[in-house]
Image (cartoon, rainbow, N blue to C red; front, side, top):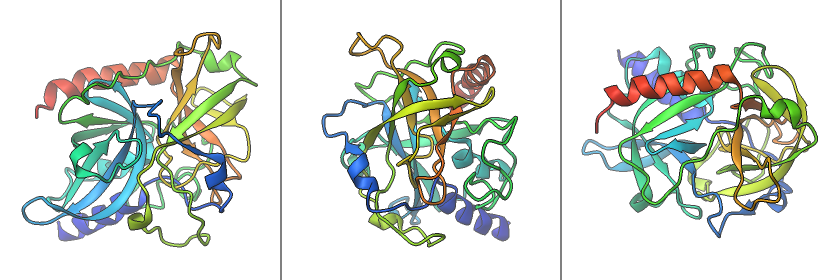
Length: 293
């Protein structure tokens, strides 16, 4: 049991998106200081002491509120927990929807549970779950839906959930501009270098990106360079099917893989397909009935 818990500590600390990119990343992503994308939140893995106080940030990712207590995120964030019955008492996960300081405990909502699309393999510990490493989950691997769900302890007050896009909207959206939103880092680092979560600024950022090509039922390619990096995994990709409408954004995909250098790939998971949305809806009905604060 002790060895399993040790593996899980490693897993949740590293199964969080993409490695560092270059200094130019910060110039391509805008801080959401006006809170335009209030339903996009940060997901943080904290080590806590014996009384539950957070003492060390172990990892972070992004996700989007799609129900009052449900966020959709990347499957490679939630998948490591599949191999274990539960998180150890020393680990807790929190969500925050603060646009400028997700590390502020006053903004946190506890996470009660997670679910991962059944196509994602059990893969503790990382980097086996990271699409950038091509060990177990390869970039654009057919049949793999890099999607997971996170269930919150209570509603995110005053935040309107995002609307999932209609079925198949991305099939007719090649060349269309989208907006990618997440809590990724912009600090440059050496390739394969360890991530220092303490250096993360906890800010939500957005950038424009064009749909290049739809690959299959689960994957699409977006314009390069990607400018998505460590912590952007699970972040929102919004599309406005009616550009004349100011608030017409729908959630069409989530961030999956920006490449080792946060530039060379922009492979993302579709959320507009009938199969993925059926899994989301079925899982929400099942899990919300079971999870009570």
